[in-house]
Image (cartoon, rainbow, N blue to C red):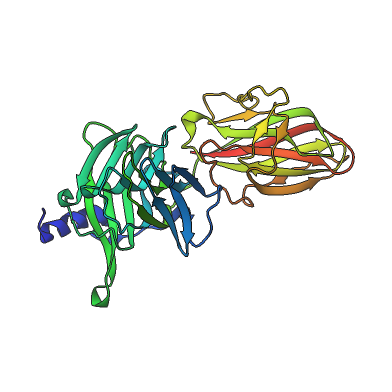
Length: 400
């Protein structure tokens, strides 16, 4: 262990930014993900997975992630990913209380990570607990490349996971850079509360992390452990330590001669992220259309789509775009949309017989990302008489 004076010197060098005149510089925090646990979960904000008898329950300002038996898995992570910009630092934070002692093969993780198709951690910087105790770990492409138990943390080993703690992970990433695992130490009396760094990590001969745009949350899983464990997840955030303007690209897709019936909603076009580009945040920008009769239009997230002939949907590159340049694909051959599934995020009316009806949506819709496996669909229903849409253009914004 490093003595207290040496530890303070190291952390002064890590956490302070100084001018050539040794002036301490400060910076503005730019929030990207802000999730308040006082609100109920939403598919626009949270990705939730449960297997076996696992369960997620909201209790006041905590989400209780319960592991009840062998083979259980319970996951709750942010739908939005972090968005890192080279040249400034990033910080992921999560509020967690985990009072249980693990006796079997169960393991709990919480921090900054994403999942593969089997709901296992693929990339990540996490805190955790297993039968050996509290630990900090780093994942790259599905492999746990580093794991340090509490007695091996190189700055401080003062952390009690049974209390409610705010855990932070800070990093700088041009591809390389230091990772700091931090905790908000809160005490009564004169000591008050302050940030305490527990461990620092810098890989050698490879990037810090393979993907800097991950999600914030927690999970518990086991193979043979029959015990009950409860992890309490509270607020989550991801911020950039500095101001930034993200590079944006508008991706648009055009369809023509679409028939809109007056008895049910029909899908016009649907967008989703490509499997290889799910770290690129997407926002609805606007749509434009020409219709001969009045219609009601909705944007929906995660509503089920199907075709009359029951064949698979066809996903294509949006019109007049280079597939290597964009992270989106679009579907325009779905015949049906299940309005009892998914979430409506916007609705408007377009008047027939007029000119183009552009509707700006970007700042009105509270969604900053399409969560994994979700689609965003533009659909419509005619008000009285069947309508024909001569031209429909849907626009999405990619942030890089």
